[in-house]
Image 1 (cartoon, rainbow, N blue to C red):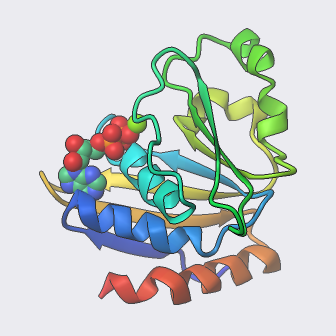
Image 2 (cartoon, helix red, strand yellow; image 1 turned 60 degrees about the vertical axis):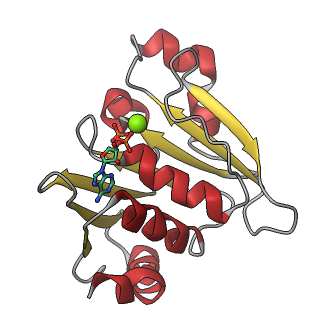
Length: 170
Ligand code: ADP
Ligand code: MG
């Protein structure tokens, strides 16, 4: 029982960054967060908020030459490392194998954020947090948080998210 998914509407990129910062407080080593949405929806913007909360200021906004960027987080943070994958330019399963995609789907030390996860739909893990971002207007975005699979662990995760970031939804 996961209860109803959490939905938040933001009115600016700064608000989306703030949601990312709050979301980071719910994340622990081993977590995988999939960021789904069209080009310009705000996936990287949300990733920047998560990164900033972990002490990573210089996240690369568009990893055009590498599919993966890795960062150390602030010393003492609950999350050890940040792996940021952007699969927009993924050409196929060979690319997944060459970056060692499976390891990022079960991060031992750190968390993984994935933009364009649908490009790797056959290689996704059993458990992840999915954030669907939808453009409503020029400055307005709907963020929908779903924890997969639909079980008790996911239910607790959504409740934790609700208490960390739900207050920003009003
Ligand atoms: P993506 O990674 O999904 O392609 P980006 O995060 O790189 O998207 O870009 C989102 C663009 O939309 C940025 O130019 C940002 O300033 C703009 N934007 C406008 N309103 C919002 C909002 N509410 N949340 C996030 N981004 C927004
Ligand atoms: Mg992006």
